[in-house]
Image 1 (cartoon, rainbow, N blue to C red):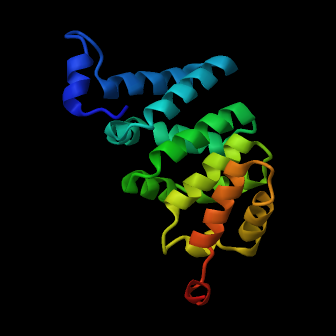
Image 2: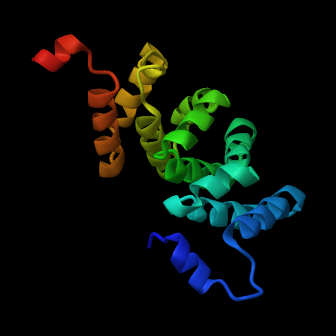
Image 3: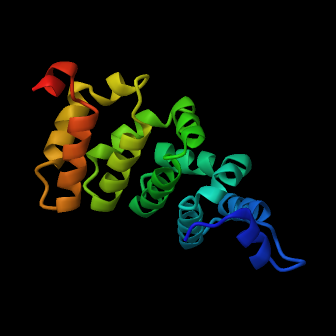
Amino acid sequence: MFSNRAQLLKRTPENGTDRETFLSLLVDEYLNSTLHDAKCQVLANLANFAYDPINYEYIRNVGVLDIFLYVVKNENNHQLLHFAVAGICNSCCDPLNADYIITHAGLKPLVALLKLENINILADTITSLLYLNNNQIRTELSTAEVVQRISDIQKSNDKRLVNLATIFLQDVCCTSDQEQL
């Protein structure tokens, strides 16, 4: 459920931790943890916080987007990648977050995830790319390699992937000539 500031204040105990501080503590926990399971749990929690628009500013302020981008750029573990791309997907519908992801070199590593076989990662990646799509990056999203990979995904047995791939090809790769048909 989406929150507003009044609801957050009402639910925060008098001596409790505010949302931004709590997210900052989660970031610290992720950065200082050496245990894989702990990193996964914290990253999953951060991705869940990215679902609520009330958290978008906090997410930018405390470095959550940086963690998501770091994982997408540097990790090979599918569990960590799944949580990071889910966090990106949850947060990139916000224009400021989308701009942050694009200007911090997030597009290329997201496109690279299209080569994976993990259905959840693929679904969140395609959805993220749809949210990030704009006139500035459309040419990067409609390269022959990306179109081929999305076309391959469109042949999946997973209906969700088929639908997302179809939407991607229609919305991102459609030229003005095709639009007139």
